[in-house]
Amino acid sequence: MDGLKRMPHYLELLHMSVLRIAVVVGSIWVSSVLAAEPTEKVVRIAQLVIDPAQLAAYQTAVKEEMADSVRLEPGVLAIYSVAEKDHPNRLHFFEIYANEAAYKSHIASAHFQKYVNTTKSMIVSRTLIETDPVQLSAQQGQ
Image 1 (cartoon, rainbow, N blue to C red):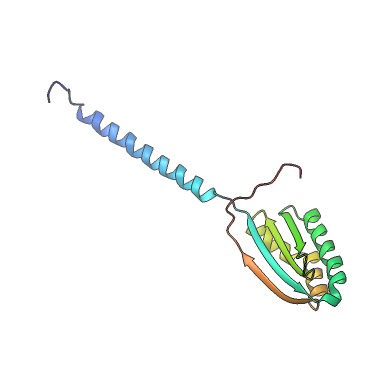
Image 2: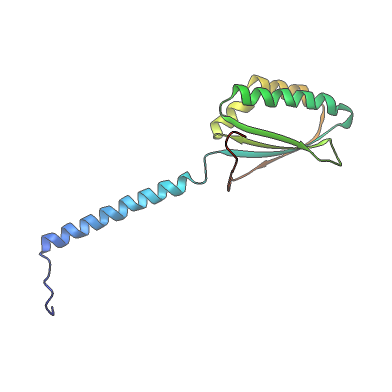
């Protein structure tokens, strides 16, 4: 073989076994990294239209529910609510939960059920949007 020595057969087998193990371990590691990204977090968007005559009562109820949710539920990471400037009865909510179990716990909570029962006659329309988080960035402590 042109001056190159051939490895003994048992070393070739050992070398192949080590390579196979490295490929398997590497594949498992890559799979776990990809499965973990971007996050287990559940992000939901809700778009509501509120009866203008009941907007003040709705805002009182939703502010109470949102405050209770972030105070009482560790899995509720954030809930934001904004109103359109030209249409203050059109509200948009951006909600972030630690995972699916946290979301399910939230919608089963007593304070959320109270909100649902209190506001159902105030809501003219509701659109719920499920999302896949791409990137969630925030400043620490803000």
